[in-house]
Amino acid sequence: MEQEQGNLESFLTWASQIGISDSTNHSQHFFSCLGHSLCVSIFPHSGGRGLGAVRDLRRGEIVLRVPKSALMTRESVMEDKKLCIAVNKHPSLSSVQILTVCLLYEVGKGKTSRWHPYLMHLPQSYDVLAMFGEFEKNALQVDEAIWITEKAVLKAKSEWKEAHALMEDLMFKPQLLTFKAWVWAAATISSRTLHIPWDEAGCLCPVGDLFNYDAPGEELSGIEDVDNFLSNSSIPVTTLSNGDKNIVVDEEQVDFHSQRLTDGGFDEDANAYCFYARTHYKKGDQVLLCYGTYTNLELLEHYGFLLQGNPNDKVFIPLEPAMYTSTSWSKESLYIHHNGKPSFALLAALRLWATPHNKRRSVGHLAYSGSQLSADNETFVMKWLLKTCKAVLKNMSTSIEDDTLLVNALDSSKEFFTFMEIAKLMTSKDEVYTFLEAHNVTTDAHSFTGILLSKKVRRLMDRWKLAVVWRLRYKKVLVDCIAYCNGILDSFMK
Image 1 (cartoon, rainbow, N blue to C red):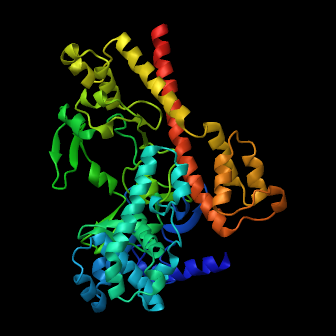
Image 2: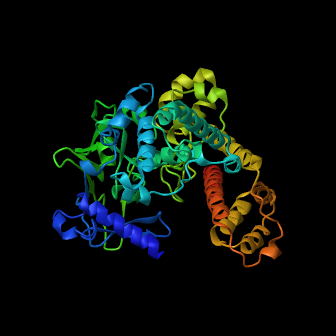
Image 3: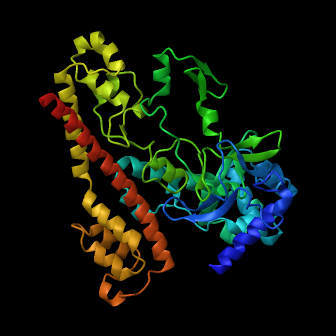
């Protein structure tokens, strides 16, 4: 712990020396870039290490500046002529692949890299889906999640193979040529880069990437398909050059894109990446950054974490082909909310699907306005939803009760005996024994009483826990949807 604290202090001193500061008066922070507005703190129940407020902060107040010269971008790294010449010989590589190579190139420089203190401060491993092994992938249990994980792994391997020739041209050390090194660098880029206007690959931002994630609010939580909503409303709309929508509500303009970036963005006038308080913070509060709107599966895929209460989470259930063709709603809008309530579009689609073909035209306007079509129609829809959610839960290989016990075992045990004692309470222990066999851990728990789990096994268990927490949240949404349907059905009985 002392060494880790020493490394952190050295990193913050280096950051101050290159102009990073949380104060308008940079001279106040010669020995650390923080202290006026922010400090590094541990938040055990909300992201681990992050940035806390050292004083009360007002919404919109600038809390951190990182000069352009401190950012790691393709442009800044490729000031190295050797790298620039080599990259130009491989024009087919994407900007993200090139930035990934640039990161590994700087790592290979060791202490001679201008970003060495920052590189030493980066995590040694990540939990993005591309790093999931066969066991963790299957532990997700849901076909959609398994497929997305497989796609992420295949994409990472394909991009690594495509960039291999460039890395060989640059004479990378053998350990930096491996897929393990590549997927680490790719995960760093995926989880830590921030948007910059001149490069779609983004930038690595020392200190700025210490902010933990805050999900967007639920101001328009009842509207899932913005385009469909806007096309059927009287709200004034303009379309930005990047395709985002500007909406005027009660004479106040809400720009979805800029609202997402009010807490951080590159300021051309200041020639720096500037971060602002996205809300009012009290001294000691964690200061958070919103990266955008993500489901838990997307957070796992790109960032390697998930939220217990994510207002933007979605659950998709199997639908019959005719349900997709009964309305103009997109497949992406037909889902169940994090609280178990079917989406506006899903209800509209199901109501029309449950209506005879020859009557759909006459009631279509009611369905698209969110109205119930009749008591019989709504009863049919609720019974279908209820039956489908129950069928999905029944087909899952573990129950909510077992998943809850497993999360407790993975979360609370640091030694093998405790883990196995909690796991014994599960109805089905097949997954536990599969994990133990896959990683050559003995099943004789009593011989390991008091023995701490190895660091490697602990890391694997942490990744396993992410998969279990994700599927547990998925199942709870289905249970909440069943309760929602029963509530509607009960209302018709009164």
